[in-house]
Structure formats: structure tokens, C-alpha cells
Image (cartoon, rainbow, N blue to C red; front, side, top):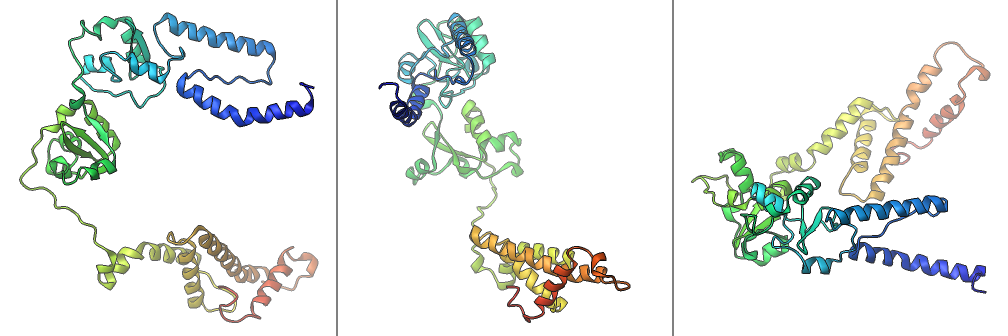
Length: 356
């Protein structure tokens, strides 16, 4: 039967296998996938659908193309003269704000059968209120030619442009200008934040400063460096340092943390001297917090470190508990016998084999 339990199970399995691909397709192409809670009543589902439809109708009435099932291909074919740059930012602030990274059409509108993308809701409302101010012929600003627009570069693209070097000797132009072109404002940029503008490459300190350059490249591109600039800081391999310098740069921080921990705890392991107890604790601490080791190794030695600390607490516990006159077993702490036997058992294994 078409509604038997077996048939329904097969249909349900096929649905679960394909629904994710269907959802992804509709989200990418039409952006109209809306999830409704099927456990609710049919009246709740009906009201939710009517509410979603009313929202879509509201967008239609305001010329906003959000929720109108505009595919990416259709969007590219009908983009206005500003492409995917925000016309409001260009007109009001002369800023080039690229909206291509925003896939959603939440802040996009249609005017004269062309599509325009804005960077935010406030600019969208301003465009809808007076669109003639932001499109030709009423707009006095035009988008530069494609080869004159700044574009981001990946590290691989920068390396492929070798031997071309970054402008300003690799210093961040935004940091330099914002720092009033002082010597202290000369900060090296990073290859991961690179931009090509007018066939020249610029690198920046952070992504925020990269975005700032993309908005107004003319403000930052024509800068001259002072005659003296900070030298290039080439990394020095640790193995080339003398022994004392190698230890200072390589293990000083870890040793300080371990010595601080042992100084705060002051462990005294049963049947071991103070000095040997401290040395073993430092060794376990370094192994437990060695970032070069695998996670399994670190967890293994963290457990050993915790056990070492627990056993080191046996002596002060027994000293405080056994002080005074004899007390019968009924008046002793519940864990007294267990900890006493544990303490005596540690004496049967002299040395450090029972610790490590």
C-alpha cells in the first residue's frame, strides 16, 4: 500500500537524504527557504505562512528585491551602473563600498528595471526615498573603470606577482597616514591583507585598515616615506643563539610558570625529600603544559600531576588528623583509614618509579 509503514519509512529516508541539498540550492539561488515548526497546529502554520507572504508583499511595494527569488545570475545581468558598490556611499561620502561579499539581498532595491545594492538599512531607506539622487543622470558621481577599482589579493596572488614588491616598502599606508605620518606610525603590513590598486600592491596591518583603504584608496596611495625607515626585522633562529639566549627565548616562560607553581604548592611527596619532590613536580608540570606535545600526552601528564598533588596532601592531612590523644575508629574521619593505608602503601615503592 502507498501509505504502509514500509513505504512511509522509505519516503522519509529519501527525504532526509535529499532535503539538505534542496535547502542549500534554494538558499543559494532564491534565498526563500523558510523553516516552519511542523509540531505546531495547522492554524499556527497557516498564520506563519500568511505572515511571511505579507512581509514579501511589503518588500514588493517598497521596490526592495529581498525575498523576490532573484537568482545570482539574474542579479548580475540586471545590476545598475554601480555594479555591486553602494551608490549612497559613493554619492554622499565618495567611498567605494563593495557589497559583493554579502550574498543576501536584504539591502538591495530595483529602480528602472535595474538592481542596486546598499551597504545597510539606513542607506537602503535613503535610496528608496529619493532614488534619482543616486543614479544617473541625477547623480554627479560615477563608478571608476573596472581596472581602476581596488581589489583584494590573496597571499598566493601576491606571490605570483613576484618580483613586483609592495608599495611603501611593505609599510601599512593607512596606519602611517592615520598616525600623522610620524616615524612611530611606520608599521609593517601583512600579506594576508593585500590590495591591488592601479597595478600597484599595498599591504595592511589589519583587515579593518584594509577595508578603510578599499573605501578611499586615493587618500592613502600617494604617500612618501621618510629618508630613514625602521629596518627589516628578519626572524632569528633559536638554534643560532648562545646557550643562555636559547634558554631565555625558548623555555624561560615555561620554567618561570613551573617554578611559580611549585613555590605556591610546596609539595612534599611521601618518603621523598623536599628537593626531590620539587624537582619531580616541576618535571610533571613541564610535561603537562608542553604545547609542543600531543593532546594525549598533555592529558596523560596532567593526570599524573593531579595524582602527585593529591599524594603530597597526605602528609599535612595525617599530621592534622592524628594530632592529640588517641581516638577510637568511630570518631575518626571517614576517609582517615583509606588515606593512611594509601600513605603506607607508597612507602613500599621507594624512589620515583611509583610517581612517574
